[in-house]
Image (cartoon, rainbow, N blue to C red; front, side):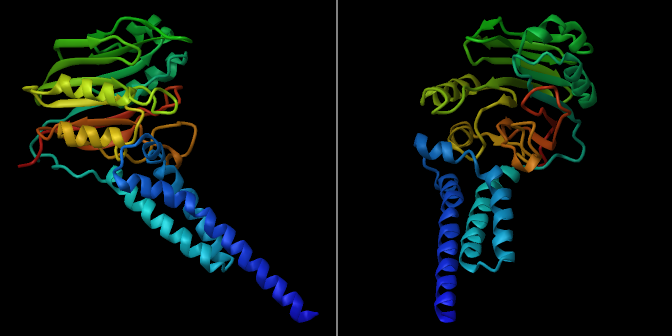
Length: 323
């Protein structure tokens, strides 16, 4: 009887370990999707999630390791390793460092969320950032009604026309302490706004971006078409280019690869994540980003104070690259 009990216990242990090991296939699939470089929509949607999945997988792996469930622990460790490899280019994108004698221009970019009415939080976040240039997308009716207070200290402004969507109305904004010229706005459902700022670094083309959501939340070619339009807009630009805003895609997925390979763009570090703002940093995805051409660099990147939106703002210090 005792032997039968041991045999049953051993069988149950193997079954539990097998089930837990199979559970590791989910994180493994996400890691492999991100590492594969495949642009198919099914692969691309999985490639968005390595960053929030890694800490969850790591925690689960530590639990099974403490329980001495060796097979799922090894499977979890393999998944953690591949997830970390997938995330690393987001964290450390490379590119030149700042020149030692370079002036710094600070840029603040935020998706304010169209239905957000907490203008006080928006203003507090902008004041705390003390940025030179501000890029705002999903600029809704509440901040627009208080635009003079919200953007006090930023006399040079470009604002797109009001675009009415099914549930809200939005604009996009570039506001600057420095003069703006050579403006370009494209007012469709997901807007692009662009202007050249005359800064201590010289002229910089600043492009505010808000791409549509990825498939299956929107039509599958939406992000690709909008990204191609962005690349066409900046093609042949005579000045350094900085793209900032909500790309609705992480830098290592399909859209980020397009911007890097076809536009020769470099992205700022993407950790901690920006969305959804209510979650701790390690569980958020970096879909709010800054990309730039190689003739300018990011000396520092950090997150701004909450604005009442479901996105955290991104703050970068721009500088001339070393060498």
